[in-house]
Image 1 (tube, rainbow, N blue to C red):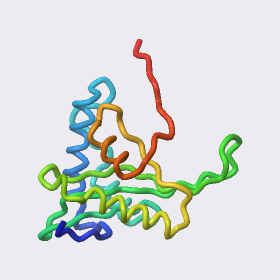
Image 2 (image 1 turned 90 degrees about the vertical axis):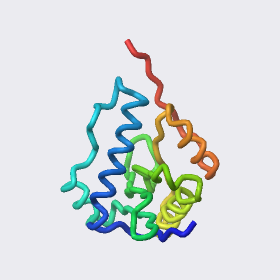
Image 3 (image 1 turned 60 degrees about the horizontal axis):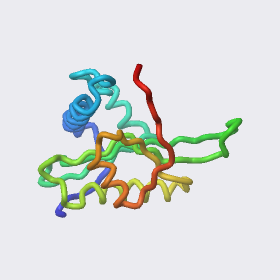
Image 4 (image 1 turned 135 degrees about the horizontal axis):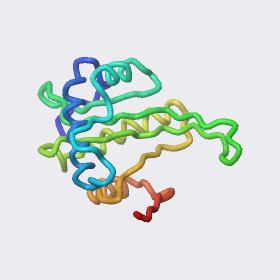
Amino acid sequence: MDCKIRKAEARDADMLLFYLGEIAKQHNAGRKDIFKCGSIKYTKEDLLLILQDESKPIFVAERDKKVVGYIMCKYRNIKADILFRDRFVFYIDDLYVDHLSRGERIGSSLMDIAVAAAKEKQCDAVELNVWEFNKDAIAFYEKYGMKTQRRILELNI
């Protein structure tokens, strides 16, 4: 892999929005009953604010001055919950690698930087959600060493 992993900057916003759109298409294709067609979870303005927020780091993989993947994260501090123990969690909101760059360990490198950031801030765990239809992502995360914590089940009526 000849990619550089770095913290995302405002100049990356358009490419991040493009990749967010690719994720949205995948989600819509996998669960049309849940995801709206053509919608993206952040506007450019939202994304620019997130890029300034130290509690929501985004890292990009860059090759030849082009972003080919990213990982979007956030710190979650769970305190004084009636049910759960206090925990400081590094949550992965999104991970995406351009389809032309898959299989080159870019996803693993992005995960490595996320785990390093979590360790640096002394987080208790790294967590994420993955949709059941996304078998490739599930296989990737399991290969990386992640384990299922819980499941959300549904009964459509």
